[in-house]
Image 1 (cartoon, rainbow, N blue to C red):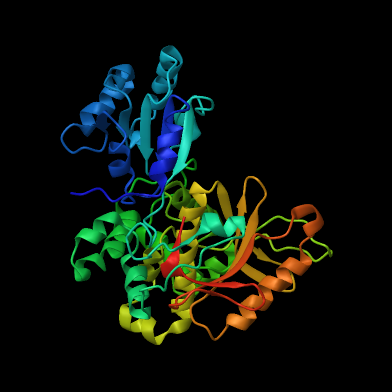
Image 2: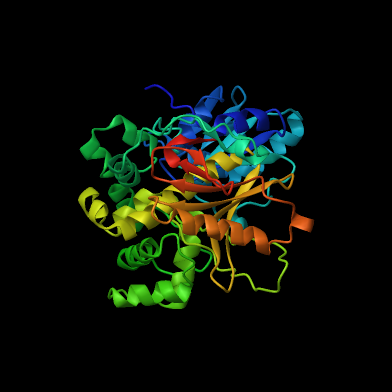
Length: 421
């Protein structure tokens, strides 16, 4: 099968020239192994049906022997044998060379299972499911990098229709789904959730927390119902109670922590910034699953339903946009947060580079709320202490429309089908 080029490829190439080890993490099925294989010269697969169990046993007795092989050596699903991490750290010290090992993992084991954090030996790359640019659905004519310089090329019109966007949301950014028929691709996220709820090993520090698939299902469904909102844990719990799946706060906290360890939940943090006024900022994160398809599957959203329910469609569309911008931000050494103050003035995404450059985005599916979105962005700038923080490089409204343009007030309107790193 042909490899699908990923945005993280350039990051991985650079990091392998630095420290001795590279740790690639992210949810299952997002393409970590396929990507790592493009950069490795030998490999061992700990979840392999034929040899995985034997390899895990060897790892507990003589882990060094599994590290032998031409570098970079890929250790796939390393969390199944955490002793390999410590052994690789020692081997990196012994060899003193860059790019010796690539570890991939779809879960974070408890710290008690490794004796070292890997600091100074391992660099880190986070992978997400594919963005629309990686799946070939965005034409990539407008670059986030150029937006952050304040001089974007507005490029060409998006080729995505509303129907295309609905399909992309429900199918998700799972690389394997691109090789399936449309009907089969739309079932991938449902199968993913079933596996998470019933089969995946969830690591827990609190052994009192027992696996109850119906409670995990209720919690994920509640997260999905609150997608792209700063819902409190209390709100999420009330939502599970209303659905008949009562969960205690301790159990919910444990499940949330474990689902984060599996990279299934991926909350969007609030922006911390100095304001001109003393208006308090809200700090509750916005709730997201790692891919909008999981949220759609959890609430039973179909193509027909979303085309008739634009409110739900709008929240899932925002989640899709956040996923994509997070992917594009990584290669630009930037983070993605959101702004909301106690007066409910909001910006859906704040993109902030390490060098201080920043921009703000509002997400609106259609054009009806464009003026409101632009006013929000302008209002945000008026409240930020730009004397210390600096002026934004750009303000933009991300839409499901066709044409990109710059408004008279300087705010860009950018279809998600045009955006790229």
